[in-house]
Image (cartoon, rainbow, N blue to C red; front, side, top):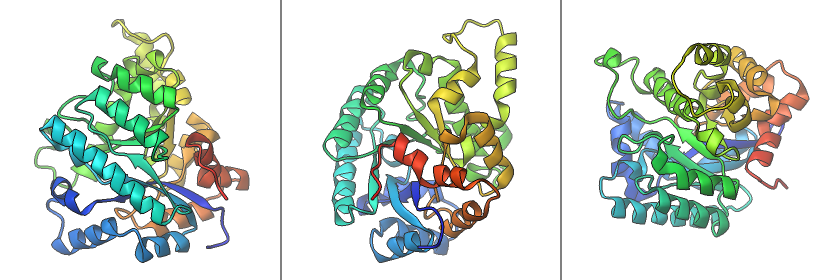
Length: 324
């Protein structure tokens, strides 16, 4: 490994072979060669992935299923069954390299009670670190009352929930036909940031103060906007389920990773806005080249204590990961 702090990487994707049909629409339009390259790397748990981790100083990768997975499955019973199967598959692959891999649960959010049960099974029996949810599920967002039992269980388990970008339920009118702005360029940022803000503004973290939400991409622009969110929330006379300004919940309940955002100004903003303990490392393998994230953070002009916090010690604390 390079002479840099050991890293815990938190947005590292995989696929079981029988999930390729769920995944295919999310890469529609990419060149076939690029899709085949991604597919090979998503299916691999051995030499290629481990070599990439070694090269970039990643000691532990927390693996998550590349979306949307069963959240796009119209049959709830099928989604529930297949989510459990994918979690068992991941647990088996983790067991082949227990010193290198951890896992996030994949959940059928169509059934919030069932998702809570599966989250508990994954944490207590399979040793997973929490769950990763790929955006909205059949048009439902995580601030809705139907998800109360899920958030109660997640808080009780001290299981962080990573909200990963996915397509919106409907494409925003302004983005229709704007192929260069669709998906990762801008659409997913707007969708995921809005999803998280619904939870902040609509009182999810007032009702569940022990819940932790994790966002990639340095927080989907939220850290940059905290002052304005507070200002406009105070100006708005609409009824609210919050007792505190939005920034209070962002600082208490929100964590972010650097995935896909290898630039100093947003890193500094996230550190300043949320606090040093709220920013963590991620390479977004294989959708980003992990060398970019590693080189950026290894050479960023920040203190060595901050570098170590972002690289590994924050993740060890937030996700209760024991590091050898």
